[in-house]
Length: 483
Image (tube, rainbow, N blue to C red; front, side, top):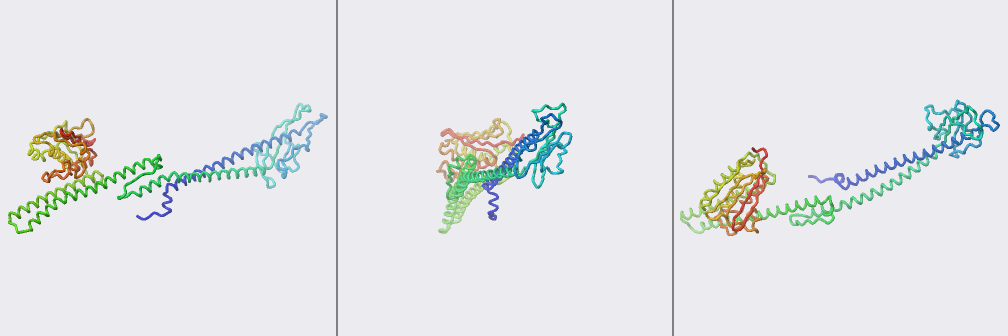
């Protein structure tokens, strides 16, 4: 597998993704704030401008009055028109009557400037290269309160326009101010986010560094307090501790297995070698050669059995770990128990031990019948060897109203000490160190039974009372499709 490039690592970096997400979100937020700020600023400035425009238009309308001598007609004092909003660009105004006649207008009133035909009160236009905003007021009554109004009082139509250059300049200044403030806040927020993300990921980096220091020579894994106290890292820390503990245990078991296997193999090989060397030391008779070779064959048989048991244990553990898969058939459990009892009947009879089987009905599992028989053989042989002469062993089979098959082997032997009970399923473990090689035991039977039970998703446990006997219980899940 090739090494990843720096760009690829950066793209797949959690830190880079988090920073990019924060930056993008803050940019979107800043953009939204700028747009909203400009929108509401523009609306506020326009409302203020429209209010000022309306006030000036009404001021112009107030200059239209009736003559003091009660003569017919209206007079308009043009000299009292308020000053323009923009001193450099005079306002435009026109006063007329509602019948369409023009009463008066500003001196700079552009020729051809028409009122909007769509009836809107405000509208925008450009005149002399300048943007203007205009207001149209219709049916404005004469505001003169000093002179009596005639019975038929005319109404006014006013158009007042002022340049929006200053308003747009204020809008630009406000927009730039809002943008500058937003960009400053954006930079500060991104800086804080980057620092926070780096500090937040520091426990993860420290955890990775501590995990990288673990090796087959150093199994010490001590996560920092920050990693232990970080809620998001607690599951990862716990999983790593569990995984490393399992790996450590597995390596220890493998080393122990190799050491024990070497020790177990050393004895028959040494005896075989000694037997052959004794045959070669001096001339022997044919009978002596035959006896020596017979002894050598017995040692070879023991060596072959040990290798077969080790191979069977390895395969069972591989299957329990999911490395092997097989198509399984429906098996009636009581038949496999009977088969195991038949295999060990000569051993039980030689010690006058009675083995009784009781079952509460047919129980089926999806399994290899040879595997099940091997489990029962190992457990039954262990019970026979630890039962007193003329004793009794009970084998019970039931499902206890649960979706599991329970198979129990109970003897009435000397029992197992509490200190030994946790180790009975370990490989090459022997509760009686003085066991002679004539017993034929290797300390692998219970380990194989445990591995096979776990391969089928089951469990095996031992309970014992010293002086009263031992009970081995195997629990195997039943297939829901079984009748």
